[in-house]
Length: 272
Image 1 (cartoon, rainbow, N blue to C red):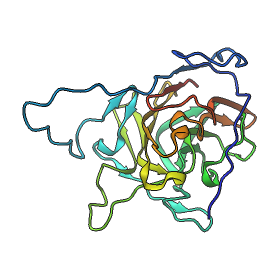
Image 2 (image 1 turned 90 degrees about the vertical axis):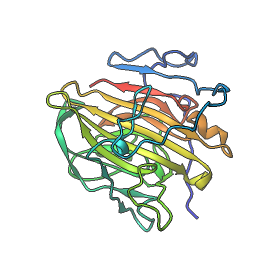
Image 3 (image 1 turned 45 degrees about the vertical axis):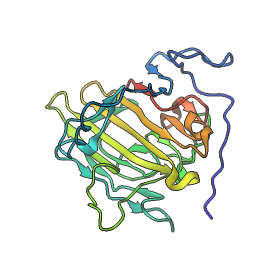
C-alpha cells in the first residue's frame, strides 16, 4: 500500500494572507508576493428554475473563470497531458510529463526558461529534466531539499488523475489534466488545469480542480483552486495536506505549507 508522510509545519516562509487573519507567529508579507484567499463559499439556496437548465458548455466554450481559475480543458487547441510513470506506480497516480516547449520565454527566479513540465501531483517545474516527487511530498518550510529543479507547487499533494470509464470519450473536458495557450504576443498565457482529480487517501469520493497560469512578459504566475471537495477527509478541504509555493535553489516562498490556509476559492499571484 502506498503511504505518505504528512508534516504539520509550524514555521513558514515570509508571506501573508489577505482577507484572513494570519497566525501571530507568522512573519509579515514578502516584498514580491501578492496573495488573496477567499473563504470556501457557502452556496445559497436558489429558486426553482422556470425552464430547463442550460446545456453544459462544449469543449470549445470560453474558459471558466472563478476568482482567477481558468479551465484549459475548454480552451480551443487544448492538449490533454500524457504522463510517464514514476517508479512502479501508474502514470495517472505518480506521473510526470516530458519536458515541454514553453510557448514564450518565461523568467523564474531571475532565470529565463524555454522548457517546462508538470506532474499528476500538482507540481509545475522548469528546465529540460523533469522532476517532481512521489506522492507530492514536500518538506516544510520551503525551500524543500528534495527538489533540484526550479518548481512551482501549484497544489502539491498526493493526487490521482480521473479518467473516463470505457467507452466514454477519452477527450471529455469534464476531467483530466489539460494545457493550452491563449491570447496573442506579447500578452499570451499558458494555462495548465488539473480537472477533477481526487486525493489518493479519499479515492473517487473526492474532487480537486485547480489551475496555474503563466503570463508572458510580466512573468506572473496565477494559481486558483476552483474545487476542493473531500467529505470523508474534511481536513484536506482546508489545505492541510497540500503545499502552495515556489522555489529555486536556496530560495523559496510558501503561501501555505501543509497548513489550513488553502481552501476552495484560494487565489495566489506569484510575482517574479
